[in-house]
Length: 624
Ligand code: X8Z
Ligand code: ZN
Image (tube, rainbow, N blue to C red; front, side, top):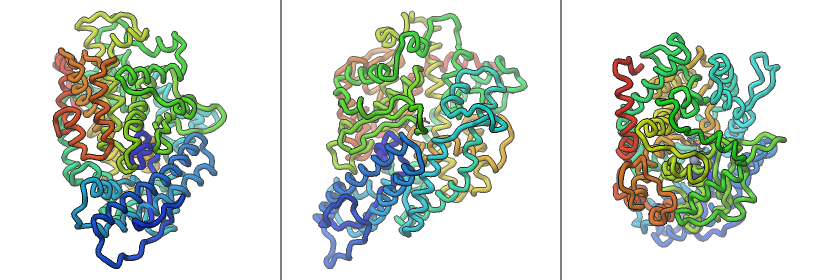
């Protein structure tokens, strides 16, 4: 997620979703206190001036740094130790932050229409769009919203499935996800899938409440609804952003359809045509992942050329006794090889790498800068798998963003847009080529031949390409929920309509409006916007191409690794240091030379695979 809204909480963490910053309308002259009180500043006697606005922004940054630090501290404690007490504690800080930000936004209206310097104007804009969960001005409603949000995330973190009769061994998401990844038994898969999807049923009334209250909060600060507020943080009008997301989807959809068609054909061979019919959506429990969002776990079932060199990094990690610390060290080494600095000692002391045995925690991976002052951490429940190795690089990407912008005022301590924050670590993972893995001792030599290239590309596509429609649809659903287009009575129906429309995936058993399947995905109960991940899947290829160019790479994009290249590191660092201080097209231009998000580099990367898939799919009944 990203810091408060965006960063740490905001950025990497999506976790914090909640973070609704807050605030009181402090006057520029008001003195910062440990917890700035939520009160409205007296109307100024004289007309506000640009100099006053600048002072206001300075005070705002100082107040927010204190408030967001308290908030992130409470969130960190809650996420690493879920109890009623830590939940209530976090909710109470969140309430304060929400109050402060709400008031500050209203107060900042004094400066509307003034000709402000660019930094001040941007800070005031960022303040207005900073909350992913704005609260209404009414204190009772605000408190209700904060506690509802905390309960929702708590329900997710504590979710367990104890068998159909509730009397079996209780399994949490990590254990159920292992079944989804490894089992090839359709009944077992279905059991794990339905079991996990039952944990979100009790969320439904809470979620309805969250929608109502946060919509009221969004209205209170001048937005039509919460979705409009979320879409307003992309340096363009919210309606234009919607069109932009659809334009990007249009660029990649043909590639997704080709992958879908091929995978469905192979799954039909594994599970039978009756379960996986041609021309129909793929049942959601057969794709190796609880949400069918990434399909890399079924690679062995769909491997194009069996018998070629192994790409199995997970078993190498296990065989070589990699523990979580060693995996994170390997991730850090990638960043330092580019000339970026090592992580601070405190990172190693304060992070949570392993799932504690004695308590519930939020295992969903996140990255933090708790004090907005280079207090870097990751929070994960690491297992020795390739998937977790990739997630470590993803999280470290957030940490490296933090570490290069933490000296900026806190309102600028965020990604150029939230998709940028999500794309940094991922862009580097595109350089984790077989040659890199070989020198890290995690793969034996992979001969460069056409078959190996296709195997590798398909494995990448199962993670990167398969994700695209899911990355888009989560917020298509929420935008419709927040706007009121989708009513609570249709929550589940509309969720599955979108999953079918975009992903070509279907519910494996009949669903009803007793179910709340969107709530079985972390970012919904945790209220973390999701379009950022869709953007990141596309942006990371733009970044990769630019970094490869900086590194002087010649040849195919899918063969480039920037590992060890300092020129690429400098190019990356220059963008990280900008944080959110400039509109994202400026940051993108500095890195890539273009001002548009564009899927062309992603299409270029996967060009060899696409030619092969088109061949395979000839004569097949593709689509759904
Ligand atoms: O939530 C995350 C990260 C933390 S920002 C682990 N991701 C999305 C997800 O897990 O659904 C990364 C990929 C998409
Ligand atoms: Zn992330």
